Length: 330
Image 1: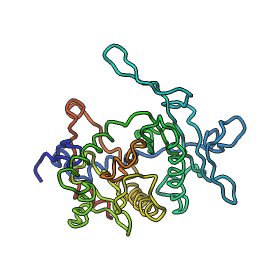
Image 2: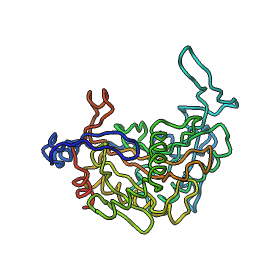
Image 3: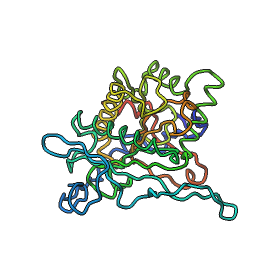
């Protein structure tokens, strides 16, 4: 296909679809094959035993017959820290500022070498139940506006420790990317009386070109407006604005889609680093965001943004999402 510009119907952002910039998607995969994942010894790993003497006391610990299997602990080097102060807005000259208060937690599983796609199904589901449990605890803090849940896998995705772990950061503002998504969702609902994400899901299930995997309660697809090569979106099929209100059956469907998608990323794209994260409605002003539809985004680290992308905010994607989905369905 020739290059074309595509506009995201939620955010309004434009991307350039330019498959001609790479001879074929396999070129990117062959390049990735030259990068070997480097493990790390469990000796000295801070996540080997969160309950060891000298460590900060875990927030939550989930146990089985072997002992602990998942723990939520305070991040040793938090981006924001929980202080007994109110996040009161202030100004520094023309700039608006807030104290960097909030919560920064780490969710770690026991096995040193099993990343998310390689966990057992029960352990993968436990990770998401733990996300939800901690999220519900944070709802009691009236100064928290948004809870970000994400995973960095590999050094190019921002993981400084090899042992698989996930992060939860609660902050007193709604992040700009989330705000754009919320605003775009509201605009579409007001104009069409429909959830924009439900419309996208319906369209993708009808066309089937970009579907990567689906089950009874969730679906994974390569977005028509993909900012990154092999980007994946995962949605519960049921219209659910709030992640924390998701019932176990729907959560299991999302976990199944995420595990399956990541296994295919690992197997078909030569095991790249990646990020995944949750976009959900904010903590405050409940029932204001009934138009929204929570979802997950998976971004393999295949390309590097350069001058055009940084200077314009318009991403150039060299892989047609139809072709990306075809590769990931294998």
